[in-house]
Every structure is written in C-alpha cells, then in structure tokens.
Amino acid sequence: MCPYRYLVLSQPSFSCGIPFLYWDWYKHKTINQLQQKQEEYNINDYGGYSIQDLYVERKYRNFKTELLRHITIKQYKDILFLKAQKYFEQSEKVKKLKANDKGDGGDQDLHYGIDKGSKITLSHIISMIMYTDFTDYCTNFSSTFRPLSASEHILSVKIRNEEFWWQSKLLRETVEIFGAMYRNREFWWQSKLLRETVEIFGKTGGYYDYRQRKSV
Image (cartoon, rainbow, N blue to C red; front, side, top):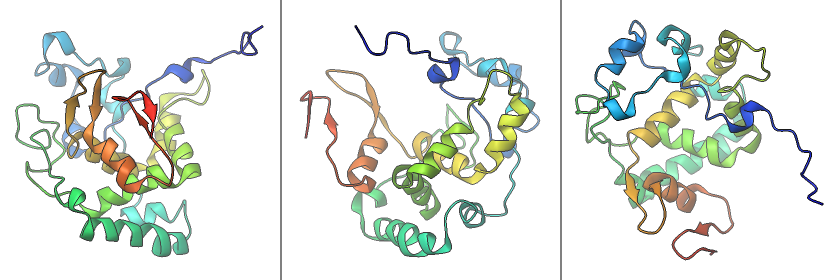
C-alpha cells in the first residue's frame, strides 16, 4: 500500500503565489489598463485581485534595515555581504548580467524603472544569496505569498509580505530583468540566470542535469 495514499494536500500546496507588485508605476493603475497591452492568448488575470489588492507599500527605508530584522549583524557582515561583494567584483558571469528590455521602455515593459543594459547591482546579488543560502529565511519569505489558511484575507498576507518588500522586489527584478530565458532542446524553458545561480551561489552539492537525465 502506498504510504501517502491518505495524504491530504491543501490548495496552497499547488499555488504559484499571489503576484504582488512593488513598483510605483502600478500604484494607481487598474487591471484593465494593464491587460490592454497584453497579448490575447496570454492575458494575466492577476489571480482575480485588483491592483490595489496587489500593490505592497515599502515598510523599511532600505534593504539592509529589512535584512537585519531577519538575520544578525554578524551574518550580514561576515557571511552575506562578503560573499555578495566577492562575486559582484570578481565573477565574470555576474559582471555580464545586464538588464533586458523588460525593465523600462521596451516592447514588453514591466515598468520596473531599470534601463536596458544596466548592470546588475550588489543588492540584487544579495537578494539571490539570501534566497539560496538562508533556508529558514527563504521559507518565511516564500510563505508571505500565500494565505496560511483558507480564511486568511489578502490584506493579512500583504502585511506579512511587507516584511520582505525589498527582498521581493529585488529578487523579481533579478529573475525577470537580469535573467534570460532559453529553450532546452530536450525539455522545457529554463532561466539561464537561475542555472548560473546554482553554479555560482549554491552550496556544495550536485545538481540535476536535465540534458543528461542524471545528477552530476
């Protein structure tokens, strides 16, 4: 008998998360205004929420202040900042990461206020390391995009997400603006940036090579 036969899964187990927005351009927009520029075959309904529901106000004045609510000053100085600075200054892969045309002014403008060709910033690198290297932090951060129960109102979820405003904004920009999508000839679309992230920032351990169908 399968040991998981009677396992009960809640709806959030399959949720991709609430698509919160952090950029000033969106603050006074409506869903209809956003959908007008979207392709007919790829209309985003934003989970049925209004832009007012999805727009998150900044809580802390800067990223460092926010981070120090979750990690110690020693972790910040001796682990996080030193590692981020090393890759930011020495990694050729990181130096080559530049913004695509979805940041500001391109045909698929996301209105993030980042000019095409801009170099990735140290703060973006820090956000990626926080996501890959700090397990408890990552778990708490990810939970702020989903209701903790069927009865939790989106306003409550949004208040929880405010605690990670800088992390949410910077990580989204890192993937969507500095990432590059490409077609894996045998399988599916993957993010080139995320693959490089595993190789550059990931902790010791193997990764699964989809082309070879084996761990390496």
